[in-house]
Length: 175
Image (cartoon, rainbow, N blue to C red; front, side):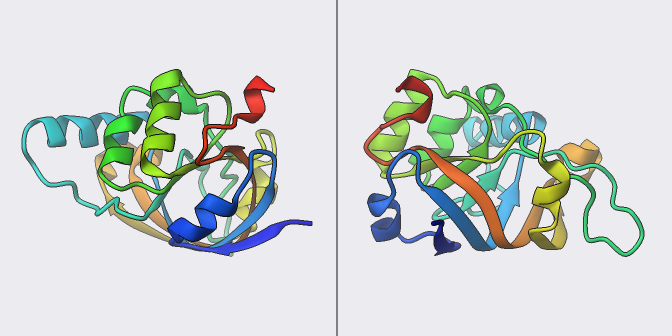
């Protein structure tokens, strides 16, 4: 049975999650991939404010395909998370609560997840069309020049994922 959670996540809900739990997320989250993460990183290092407040937010690592007529979005499967590993500890230290992607994370990301009481969810690779049915609204937010890597705000309903790394550092990839 899946655990239903509402975004933004509450710290007490995150603490209850265990690696391997099946979860359905509903609410709002942001999208960001490699290029957007690099911009976030550069902005922070240059003393600039981010265009979004990441505190208590969830970021989905996705670069969706164009939407067909009468659809909110095209196929929207997760991208490989390791490409964001250089930037993720900084965002977690700024209050980011959760990330959604696919694949393993490095030790620095896992330490930052534990240090900040956060969680890493894995979405199912290869299920992009299925996942897109959970996205009910798509709003562009910033970095439009990055095309499919621009930052968007999605409203999701029963978005399926698995707890890959829980707030204690338990990791389904290292069992």
